[in-house]
Each structure stands twice: as C-alpha cells, then as structure tokens.
Image (cartoon, rainbow, N blue to C red; front, side, top):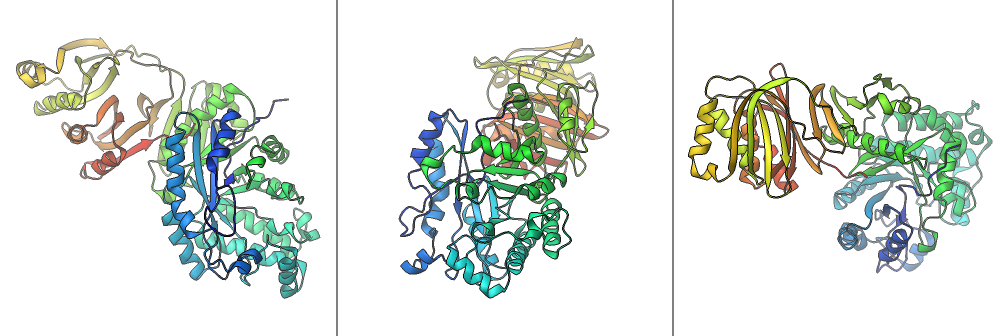
Length: 564
C-alpha cells in the first residue's frame, strides 16, 4: 500500500489574526507559524483571512463589545502587505500563499459589500465562499444558544438545514464567479444534529436529500472545488463534510481542497495526514491547491516520481489557463496522457491515452498545450539558416530579426542558448532563401553597432538544428504546433500572422524596454505563426507591451509560473 504524504498544500489553512481589533480571530504573529513550518521542512504555508462583515452579522462576543467591522477592515486592507512582507523576509526558504474566506451575507447589500472586499484583496491565490450567518443575523457556528434560537425561529431541524443549503446555493449563484472553493458545506452540524435524511442522503427520497444533491451538482457545474476541513474534528463533530457527501462529490468529479482551518500556532500541522486519509476513504487520490486563482493538482501519496509528474501537469495547467480570460480559467480541462504519464489515466476520469508519446496534453475551449519533462530528441531534418555567436543582452536577437525582415526573409524556427558568461549562440532556420541572405550578413558585419554585438554570423546550408536542450519541463506543442521550449519563470506565447516582420514587432517592443530573450521557439500552421519566448524582465512592462502589438497578433500572453 502506498504511503501517504505527511504534508498537505492547504487552502483553508492558518487564519491570520486581526491585529488591533478587540475581538481576536487567528494568529497575529505570522512569523511564529512560518518559523514552525520551516522547522518542519514544509515547502509551503498558507494563510487565510475572513472578509469583514456588515454590522448586523455579529457573534455574541462582537455584539457585547459593540465592535462594528469585526475581523477588521484595517487588518483586512493590510493583509496583502503583511503577506508581501513575509514573502520578502522568507524568500528562498518557503513558499507563502494566501487566500480570503468571503462571507456570504445575502444577495442585496451583502453581495455588493463582498464584491468590494474582493477588490481590496487583489492578488490573493484563492477565495473560499462560506456561509456562517443566517439571514436572520444569527450564526451557524456561534454558540449553542444562538443555534437553538435559530432552530426555534425555523420550526424544525429539517427547516434549519434546508435554510442553510438554500443560502449556500444562493451564494454560489450570486458570486460563484468570485470564488474557487465552497467552504464547509455541512457547518451546522457544529451546533445541531444532522437529520436522518442527510446522514443517508445517497438513498433518501426526502426533499432535504434532494437539496444536497442539487447543491453538489451546482458546485460541479460551476467548476468549483469543495473544502475538506478538519476544524470540525478539532471541535468534536467530525470533518466537514461527512463521508457520504464527499463520496458523491467524487462521483461528480468535484475537486477537493484540504485544510486544517487553524486558528492557533499550536495546531499547525495537526491532522495533515488524517485529511489525506479522509479523502482517500471517499475515493480521491489527489486534491487541488491554488496559486493566483489557478488550480494545482496534488497527489496524496509520498511518491517522488509521482510528485514530479504532477509538477509537469501543473505547469501545463498554468500554461493553458493563462492563455484564457479569468472567467474561463475555472473550467476543468480535458486531459490526454501517454508514456510514463499513463498512470494518470486511472486517476482522471474520461481522460484519453496517447500511447508511447511521453507527454501530457491539456485542452479546453479550442486551445491545447502539450508538456513533458523528457528532453526532446534531436531531429535529423536538414535546414538552411543563420548561425550566430553574440553578446547575451536585450535587443541582440531583435536586431537580427530586424535585418532579416528588411530583406524580406522570414524565420521558420529558432534555437537559442545562453552560455551564462555574457555570451549566447543562436541558429535561425530560414523559411525562404530569396538570395538576400548575404546582404543580411554584410549589413551586420558592416555596421559598427551590430559588429560589436556579433562575434560570428554564418549562413549554413543543409545543417542539422543544434540540440540546445537541457533538463526541465518542456512545452512540446501549442495547439498541435511543435515548439519544444524549456519553460522559464516567464514565457510569452503568441499566435500571429506568419509573415516577414510580424514577429519583429514583438521583439522590437521587448528590446525597447530592456527585456532579454532567454530562449525562443517558432512554429507555424498554414498562415498562422506561433512563438514561445522565454524572457527576463518586468512583468507589468511586458503585459503592457503585449496589449499594443496590433491586429496581426491573434493571441499574446505572458505566462508566469507560480506552482511548485
């Protein structure tokens, strides 16, 4: 039997405290828990904070102290800066993620309030949508007295639970676009019993059982994840949600997130393995975490090779999702697996095989990418092209493309390699030799500024494309077009009109802003050109450039990798 991990990539993780507020919630000294995570050799730690609530949604302790914006507006606004400071302090030691638990407070003012709070936490890795309060203003997770008061108002245990599920459904319908995860969906069991219809909802015909089925189907249809939350175990009522709900979620292919919902340093790390045992019991072999709102797939097993394969899968998911607008990123893609990745066929339902092709193909909405960690094999194809030895700095490759374009020569494929000593080499295969290639060489060699950049520029006929490949994760294909780019921290992907000078627009723009090109791959399909460019430079500057390339660019995206 495979060994389970001792560590989990949490979502509903460590609650950040509210600093100066009168009613405390969570950990104020975040450094203390980060230090503990580092001592445990954990690769990542995850913080979360509640969004502030309207004043008529307060717990007893909050009402008694007359605290208005509980879990404080000030601490909430300061939250992203606190995380940024932590990331700077612990850079290179641990990955720090952060999320928001968005409070549902109804479809009117509460909805507008919540939307405003999302803007105030821009940059969060994920958002959990949670129902804590009934419309009557009483909490589901407050005191027993408050729960009994709400139970009396609603008249029966079934009505109590029915109201909670209705509110959760309403939350998803109203701000399902703002969240990635649905929090603790059987929270009321903290203070009241679960009706028989819920305990056996899989076989029950009771309306309440149908309500749960409807809720889970809505979560699946909206491509949301389900929070598997250990806080209930801490409080003696069992994990949220119960196993029967979790089994149904697995049947519906709803991804799950795991977390301890920790509010004190001493509880950090407790029940990590138990949470994986719990989802495994329901049939799950993986779960998801999030970086910059994009899901990352995680294995439950302590298996190094499998973890490496998941790293490749996550890189591919990031590549594809960042080609799409935010609204479409949550859609679960289709997968194909081949070669050593074929074991994923048993894990991901409805996936397809690719035989011995050792790669993962990920596709949705007419776009696809293919990735692998296998070093691409060299091709025996012979091509004509320019071999260059040059200074490794921004603008050099752009100047070469510029000179080629001035002679009406289009580049078909490219190979670049930095020597990590201030110099680099490149080979540009030429799509059509129109007899002007010597003009290009003469111009470069005869221009003083260019001559200082190039130490060698030679035209070669019937040459093999050089093998500059190294270990790493590779983008093999984009929409079926071969590229074979080793993924860097930042990669630009484009689809454009395949004509001389078009790619030069992008390269010149990068050069003008001192953005260096680390590697470059080109491909084409009919009249559409494709490029994958590994770059180094300011991300905001690059994104701004990509919006100004003109209508000859059908797609231009900066891909940044956050997952580990």
